[in-house]
Image (cartoon, rainbow, N blue to C red):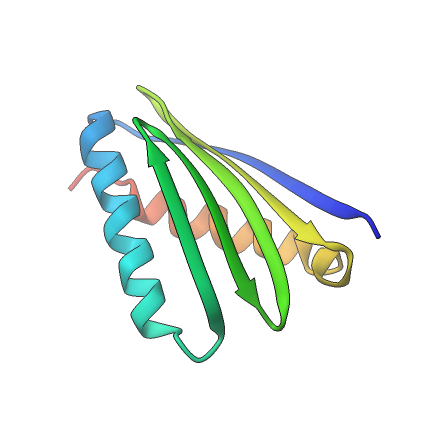
Length: 104
């Protein structure tokens, strides 16, 4: 079974600390908001790098986030059964990530 990896780079004009904090707060919100759909959400931060794993629809999704000075780089590994939704996932993550990282 193959996975499909989605790679995104979302530009921002925040400090890396502020960008990382917004990502962490959003993940905490997702965990409580979508507890019924997301069976498990694990995140491991090492500086400005995060590895994550979550279970959605009985499938394990993994990925990586790197908070850089002017962009957040994100890779999401979708199992083959979710790969058909890759472009929708890419669009949703790009749109929500851009909103999340807007300078307010």
